[in-house]
Amino acid sequence: MTKQTWSQRFETALHPAITLFNASIGFDIELIEYDITGSIAHAKMLGKTGIISIAEASTLVQGLEQIRQEYREGKFQPGVEAEDVHFAVEKRLTELVGDAGKKLHTARSRNDQVGTDTRLYLKDQIQQIQALLRGFQQVLLDLAAANVETLIPGYTHLQRAQPISLAHHLLAYFEMLQRDWERLGDVLKRVDISPLGCGALAGTTFPIDRHYSAELLGFGDVYRNSLDGVSDRDFAIEFTAAASLIMVHLSRLAEEVTLWSAQEFSFVTLKDSCATGSSIMPQKKNPDVPELVRGKTGRVFGHLQGLLVLMKGLPLAYNKDLQEDKEALFDTVKTIKVCVEAMTILLAEGLEFQPERLHEAVNEDFSNATDVADYLAAKGVPFREAYNLVGKVVKTSITAGKLLKDLTLPEWQELHPAFESDIYAAIAPQQVVAARNSYGGTGFVRVRESITAAQERINQVI
Ligand code: ARG
Image (cartoon, rainbow, N blue to C red; front, side):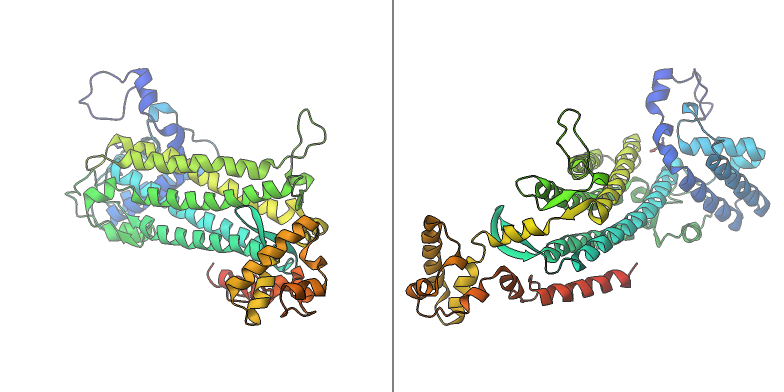
């Protein structure tokens, strides 16, 4: 039976199984550096406001820095008897600096403390994830710049629709990641609020200065209501929602790469550095990286759902249920980071697009049919009429085993007298793509403009 940190009110020790059940040290040790940083700011605030002496405050700060050092050197490894990271640090502090250590917890509670730690952690992590997203965007941009005139079939309903520039396809993901990056920045505004000094739930009787400790910690604002401050986890849910959208985007790209690498498509081959083999089928090269990313998406969605359910129906203010927010948050952060990293490596050096196969793919089908209709429409034939005519010629061509480019000029002219010999140039895939120069379209001129603009966007705000 272990002796607890709580008051003398308790006569007998906690049941060993309940000690384990109750403890969060196994996972909230992740917060230790943020806990120390938060405690340092709190100690300085206590000193500045005269709640403790300046000498005591600096003793606390020194002791806390020593714990940070011990932790970094692997010398401080608190066990389950500490219950959680907050008790662990406070206990060690008292061991190190004596009675002054017992003053650290004046005018605060673990409730505002854990909220502070979690927000400091998440602020840090969000900025790291944003930097990873930027790295991924740069890889997509570089790949796009090298493939403006590489054509790839564009699909709707997973049926070949119209050929597009491969760069245009990649830039679609750039845009998704740009929204993700911005969304994280928006979430950050609501993570950037300090609950420190909200106390257990109702504030404190001491003349604290919440704005001062918030400023020391780099928070942009402080919670205006102490009950809300200790029980709000909106920021965690918002972050997990933003993370879920990142995973949606990664997973869509992962799915495309997986399809492209299938023999049926063969648009890309996977380089050995990013592919794995089978234990039984020697010919196989498996796209484990994108598959794992696709698979890990589920756990992030699960954490979002878990946090929403965790919060619903919780009465104000702090409830122990809130301890359950951490593993969801930590795993979300970890998963997002490894997935963005893996996809960045995959796109940067794990894929080889197959130009011959792509060329074949955009030349062997009817994905230029819209362009025949556009050709006639540009010559004054009403679009719907042109559309119907082309539908007819597609049907007869399929029966005859021909492509549109194989039709002779008399055959075209029989269909409609407006056809002239320039129809061949108009339906060549390169021209089909080049001609789609509407704003946001796949035309090469537009794509080049997009690449320049995208590069400027990510250079601007880092
Ligand atoms: N380990 C706790 C958590 O993560 C710290 C806060 C405990 N507060 C309390 N009143 N028991 O939520």
